[in-house]
Image (cartoon, rainbow, N blue to C red; front, side, top):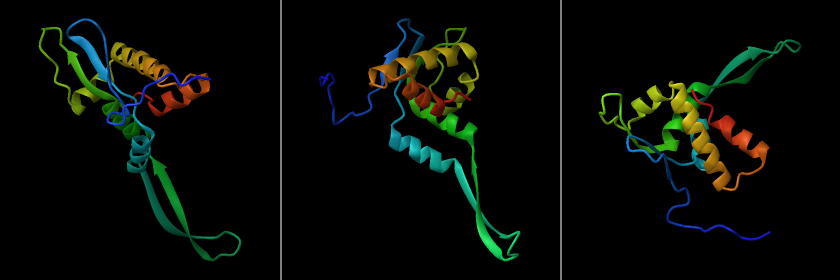
Amino acid sequence: MGFDFSIDMDNLNPAVWFGDEPGKRIKLRLCPPDKIEELRKRCTTVEKKAVEHKKSRQMQIVADVTFDENVFSRLVNCDSIVDWDLTDVNGEAIPCTDENKVKLMGVIPFIQFVGECLKELTVQAGIKQESEIKNFESSLDES
């Protein structure tokens, strides 16, 4: 097995432009594992509460963990979309803001295009096993 990639220590997670047509281009990057973990923590709430054990009838502390999948997906998508050159039907530039990213992630053709581009990035990053791609994509579940 050969070493067939270059390493840029100043940019370990490069962003790539997709789309050839002005007004229909997007710059994406894969959300790195440390960022994914940070976002998971932000979306996880742990609430400790006292409950009575059914058999011993003693009080014990239990953790109730909730995870907000929608917020997580939104945060990952906002991190993955670095920039864009998009125009609306009137030819006006659409600013690349988190608010607009969230709005556009509700538009099916946009979601499909971003999904195809991210799939290409996963292949370029060496995530070639189908199971690896599915696991990565599940963390990017579009909201």
